[in-house]
Image 1: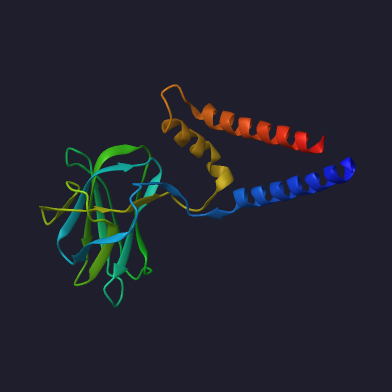
Image 2: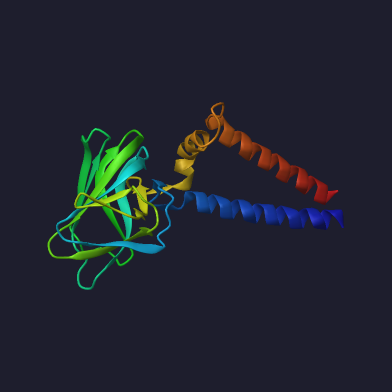
Amino acid sequence: MRRARAVVVGVLVAALLVVAVRALLVEGERYAGTNSIPANQVVVELPGGPRLCQKGELVPADTAAVEFAQATSGGRAPGLSVELRDEDGRVLARGANPGGYGPTVVAVKIPVQREERSGVELCLRVAGGGRLQLYGLTTPEGKLTLAGKDRPGVLRVGYKRPGSESWLALLPTIADRFAVAKTRIAGPWTFWFVWGLLLLAAGIGIRTVLR
């Protein structure tokens, strides 16, 4: 009976390891971070010409594209330009998407940001005569200006890393970000320590089952 139980547990553990390794090796576009705003509501329908700016953004290191939740008002998706400025008004990066993107999000490539930047003002402008519905939350105040005038709302913004990466290649970066989100005494070792404890607990659980 004990041997049969050991075989079943061994097969299950091996299957879980195969699934985990395959998931870690899958490559794709990854986020450096987001501003944690859900894309629940239409915040603004931005016409061509006026500039829409959002203050107080935290741009993560390794950002290579800025992504917005959007919907077009019929026809071909319009061109969109983006500009990032620091708190003193200096331009940090510019980028543009020529249009023709999909129906739910638009990503605008910018030069890779090698370090994290806080207090960034993010400005958008739609090209030509197109219109773009941008999503986020409509209630916050003090974040948005349209053509220099305050308006309520905050946009959902995603910050994408360059190229395509696997989760396995990202583990050191995830460990660093995990440390940033914790207390001052935390370091990248904290991430590995937590996972070590989880694996130890799993091992103890398996041993208990096999007794």
